[in-house]
Structures are given as structure tokens and as C-alpha cells.
Image 1 (tube, rainbow, N blue to C red):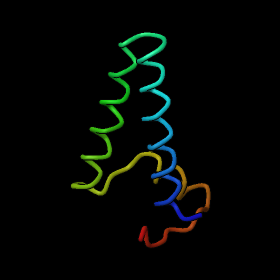
Image 2 (cartoon, helix red, strand yellow):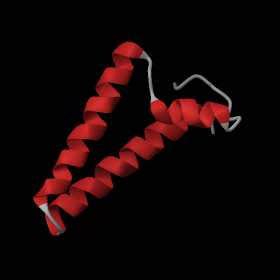
Image 3 (tube, rainbow, N blue to C red):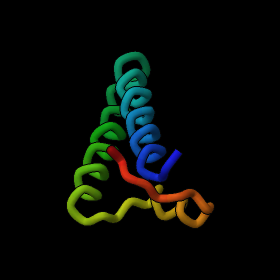
Image 4 (cartoon, one colour):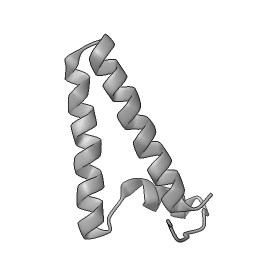
Length: 66
């Protein structure tokens, strides 16, 4: 799996998990959903993604997302 695919998978999983936690545990978990969404938005414009940097240092290959 390429870095881009891993980032998409992790972001999607975080969003789904935090929405479920927001529904069943506490609505404050929706702030985490907003944080993940804001991070995705800023990375689209700046190209900076902390997870991508970590994965690159771990030796994962960068690839085309689509």
C-alpha cells in the first residue's frame, strides 16, 4: 500500500470511529471528527501531513492516489 492509500484509510477509520463514539459515548468526540476533517482540508492545500511524514520515515513508498 502506498502512503496516500494508508493516509486515506486511517483518516476514514478515524472519522467513522469518532462519529460512532460521538453518537454512543459523548458528543465531544465530534470535535475529533472536525479535527480530522480540518487536517485533511489543510493538507490538500499545503501538502503537509504528519502521518505521511511518519510513513515516509518508516520506508513506505509514495504512490499515485488514483
